[in-house]
Image 1 (cartoon, rainbow, N blue to C red):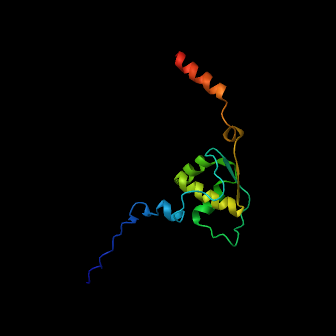
Image 2: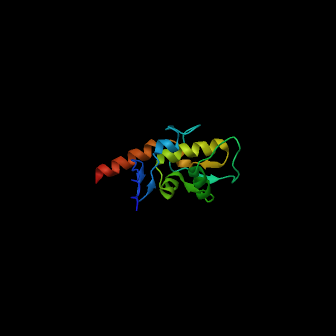
Image 3: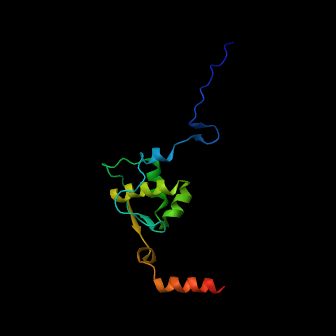
Length: 128
């Protein structure tokens, strides 16, 4: 009886988790989202389930659209999909430019902090 041929072992194969994809492979090496920056507490809402023909979408893009039918914050989305926040921000930029999601920033995130309130907090902490 012939012996089984030796199985090749690869660095990118994890027997427990399956093939491992590096974060930069998901974003094609990009580290910043397309368009303007957005806050990590911004809410993401899917606007359309139709894939635009000119924007090829990866499985992670589809997972983001599926997870954002209800408003969800960027950080919660990253946690729910078990992706790094940097990857999620880049993929959200792709989806936003394709018109598949909308991002809504809370008013407090887009307004500068009130200096008087911050001084009152610091003085209160010093009084402790």
